[in-house]
Length: 314
Image (cartoon, rainbow, N blue to C red; front, side, top):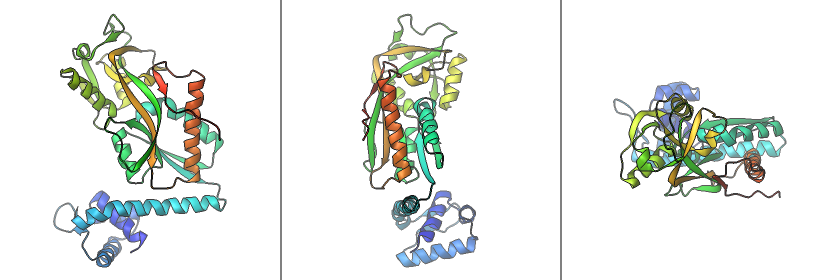
């Protein structure tokens, strides 16, 4: 068994096509097929069903896939760590964050880290919390800043809670306020048309859960938007949306109305607990934690954002 064979297998499992997998890894299809057959012979069982139509994994293939991904991620971490230890002035940080956090905290952290470490390559993945968790588990990200669901995160992840943030109703400042009191209940909100995020956004799940607990049904104006699109549609008067308080900064066209009882979400920094972080990734994590602590100490966050992590220089 070789890492190359495992990489070919993971490529086929990802795209379910020998032809496309060969293109992705940059080899001829017969070479990829021979290497996969050699891997199956070594393991003693077929990994891929080669019938007509889309390829599928055998039970053995399903069992091997997460192990192969972990082995490839560990090998990549080993190469990067050794290169740093022998003095190579380069590295890579693969970081993921939700769109609302990219608008606020993350953009500043990326700027600061790049100024401090200009030779480190930064790769940002912007996505909902659920896809980010899957990417972390597969070893495709070093760290992610995401929202902790009620039932908790995958047990293979190590998390550092950072913020407890209030969610509020965003409406266009040019229109009538959704409530004359400056606050509203979920039942009152249910009478307004919602601009709703696409599936995979924690904000969608939190909002729908709040509706279910209040015993009301949502009325959708539009479904399926990303953060920037949702905020723009709210500004245009398409409907209202439940969003984190951090996004109101720098958005003068949005009006904030708080929910009663309040809705909160917990933001955390997450990583794979069983994979050692590279020096570059550790430095990025330290920059993130330091920035959050400094902003909190300076009063730069909304009063409805509670900092859960207290940074101390080591």
